[in-house]
Length: 428
Image (cartoon, rainbow, N blue to C red; front, side, top):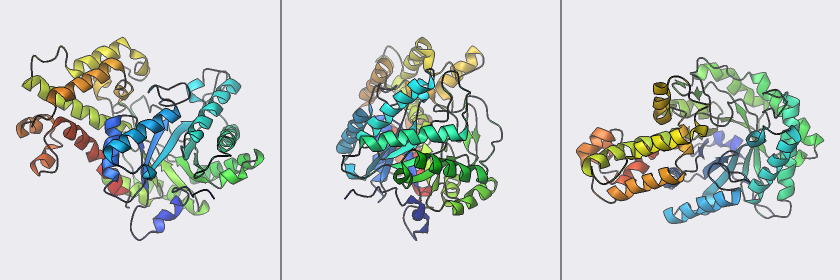
């Protein structure tokens, strides 16, 4: 008998007297981010949910160069080095659908999406977000709900078929897509419209009907979440903060979907109190990605300045100079997202909330420059005064003896400052 997926009963977590009432979803493929997440999760009894997007990881390799099975090995290797129990890791796939191939005709794009979700399911990913809302070649940008649901059910059928003869826990599914496309919003944001309660309920009902029509009624029993817009988002320049009162009616609608929680995307840069309010409001799955690599970039750039001061002749280029050169030479991952003058684009390449520099960290020259920086500083004890100047957020923890004043420890500590908010908020 297959083991039950640990997320199968997430809708009941809110009834616990103690322990986690929600779960952070770590959406990153950076090894330092994943190591930091494992170190943070090791202090709790919670499973660790790590997700890859359709653009990061797919059967063609995605921008990380990894297929789903590769990503699983990558995560497990980090867990082994970190000493984190592999059986506490839940792997998820985010925005699984035709998005990477939407320039193709719909049938071709959906064939590719089927191959992708089969690869995810066979690699042991047990939380699958079905996102088929985007139009393909010749279709409108946003599709009718019924067509979206029909295509989502088609992908669920493909996933179930792929694992039919495999042991292990069955995947749970998340439906809905009240968020920008993978990669985030491009413009400066104003007020957001919170998902109407009726729309959330209707999304669940339409998908239930589509799953039944596709012969996937059993799979629908494992739909544990629906993506909605609670009124949180970030663009290149600003963050929209969560206002619980604005989502009060949406939160109350969960009583009409008793075994389903809400999944909140783009919760990056929210305060700990806002994250806690989201969990208490039924948004039990908190997605975070760019906010983690933004914190990593802050730390690496701070260390870059420290290295330039301590070892002024050691490198031909600073890390930031290398990042600028690589992004200017290879603009495809930022040029459609960063608007304005040359000076404004320069600012955004390095300091945008959307943090599209995260697409470049795995690439050869920038990856080598980051490795060179960490190797240059090595195990050197960095003076507290330099940490105060260039890594001010971590300085109090160094002074308190909680963080070693060494480069790698400081980078992980910067990421952990963000992770701590999520794990504490998940306690409700």
